[in-house]
Amino acid sequence: ACMFAACLGIVSCDDTTNSLGGSLIDNGDKLSIKADTFSVSSETMLAGRVVARSATGYLGRMDDPETMTTVTGNLMSQFHVLSNYELPAKDSIMSRDVNNEIIADSCDIRLYYSTYYGDSLSQLKLTAYELAKPVEEGKAYYSDFDPEAKGYIRTAAKGGIAEKRSFTLTDHTEADSIRKKKGYNRNIIIRLNKQYKDKSGVTYNNYGTYLLRKYQQNPGAFRNAYRFLHEICPGFYFKIDGGSGAMAHIQMAQLNIYFKHKQKGKVTEISTNFVSTEEVLQLTNFSNDNTRLQQLASESGHTYLKTPAGMFTKLTLPMSDIMAGHTKDSINSAKIVLYRENNSSASNYLFGIPKNVLMVSADSLQSFFENNRLPDNKTSFLATYNSTMNAYVFNNISGIINLFSHNKSMPAWGKVVIVPVDLQTVTQGSGNNKQVKVTKVSHDMGLSSTKLLGNTANGKNILISVIYGKFNGR
Image (tube, rainbow, N blue to C red; front, side):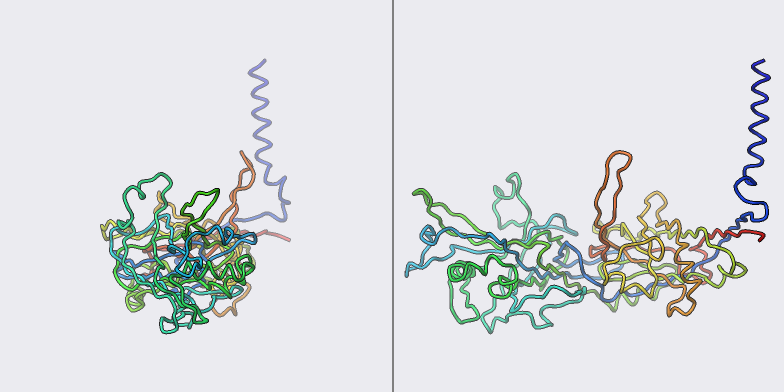
């Protein structure tokens, strides 16, 4: 009896499965699916100047062993003040000159870095320039923004600071006992202990003394970020003058003033500081070997992705072929896989592989970054490097195919650009509901470089797989 009942169940189940499609879609309006594959052509394009909005600064010079190109990063940084900033009472400051005026015993700027590229023992040279005026907020700055060329530097002839120093990222000028302390943060130090003359012609024994005395004259200017930048300290520009082989990721610049302080009858050496934060600007100016980049862009058999502000890959989607015979169909899915070509160099200092890339229409490349847009999976798409496949996979770009199919008059019709990007994210929810949300997309300003298969006569290295849908009848 049990076996008979089971058989009836199987027959009943079979009958339901056979009629499932007809129960969901009317017989006169059935959906037909068709798939096809097309070749995609590609080329390398020079990135040129790009919008620079990275929260990380870069300082140094590196040679890319794979492409034989050189990239230099110079840093401009401002300093922020808090609304409740306060120095100790004047009579408690014990560092004094012969006229019994308060002075700073010393002053320095420390550029704290988290990680770096290259060899930490490579010798580099820099000059720290005082700015004559602040770089203003409220506009987009590009990777080629040069404060020196734009007239922001307060020249030495006018009393401005131009402090030169040679350095290595592993700073052997600091004692081992300091560098080996728990909590020590690696930094590049620039000492500002030489005589300093302000814009009014007043001379101080060092820059720290200038700041201490300015505070005594006008404490309010040290409690308002705008006034501090415009009246006291517009910022500094750190320019690489020589050497190569290392580049640091500068997380924070800190301006320190050291002086003796008396409290409860005891005199100790203390410091006060100002730091760079997201409330003020920190910009990196990059320079590349553009002649060499142009040579690389003209190569065939592959394309390049190279940062910072180096090279992008442009794809030409075969829109005429994709839409031929399908003008009344909908594009349900379109997938592209961009395979990477392995490095030919075995250097220990190879640049990294770009982690995240953005696909965006060529017409919207500049406006996407200028307007702080986010990928919408309709006209812009993200892909993450897949080390197993050695590729970037765009699973469904049907949105941009449909955009092009309805806008044939676009100046760059059918063309999209692949751009290495840096992502800022937040995590929302918890457990099974945990989601990572992208909150900001900016140009990747780190050192990265890779080749992508493509840029061949027949375009067979890059394929787009398209799935069409069409309702028959009616």
